[in-house]
Length: 276
Image (cartoon, rainbow, N blue to C red; front, side, top):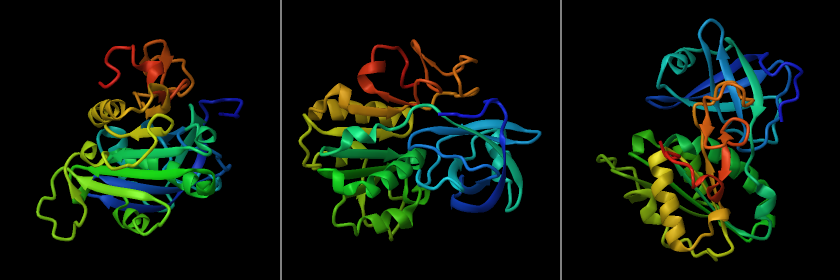
C-alpha cells in the first residue's frame, strides 16, 4: 500500500543498469532515493522528467526494497523515452499501488503459474516469491509461452529453472522461426497445459500475459476443471493515477489501479470487454 502523504509525488531514482532483453524489451535496474517496498503483483508509476509516466509491475524480488527492476516493452512515447535511458540517469517512481497475488492462499496447495509475452515480468516476481516459500507449497507448475525464441524474456534464467527438481516447467513458442538452439515446445501455451498433473478442483492458477492469451488460457483452465474463484488474472488496464481517481482503468465497478491489477476471474467475468 502506498504510504506517502502525497501519492502523486515521485521518489527520485537513479538508473543503475539497463539490460537489453529482446529487440523491443529492456530491464531497468533502479535505486530509489527512499526504498520502495512492494508485494508481488503490485505496480509502480515510472516517470521520465519532461516526458511523462507509465505503470509497470516490478519484475524483481519483492523481498529486496533498496533496488527494483522493471521490464519494459517499447510501444509508445513514454516507453520509447525510457528505452533511451542510460546508467546514472535520474527518473521518478511512485507507488507501489494496487493489489498483490494472494500467496498466503497457496499454502499446502498446488499452484500453476502461466506467463506469456511481456507477462513474464510480473510472473518473474511472483515466481521469486514462490521459490522462497516453495516448502509451503504442495506442488509448483510453470508454463510459459511467447511468439518466437527471439522475443522470449529471461531466456537464460528460464533455462536455469528447468534444472529445478521441485518445479514442473514447460516452455513453448508459437513459431520457432528456424531457431536451431530452441529445444522446447512449439505451439500456443494452451497446448502445454494438459500434463500439469494437478488436483485442479483444489489447485490455484495465475495467468499473466497479453489479453488474447489470458482469454484463451482462462477458457482452457475452466475446461480442465479449475474453479473460477481459484483463477487469478493480472488485468493491467491503462492505469494512470494509481489511486482510483482518474477513472481510466475501469473494469465494470472496479478500478484496475486500486482494486487490481490482480483479480479473481469470478469477480470480473460478468463485465463486458475484459479481454480488450
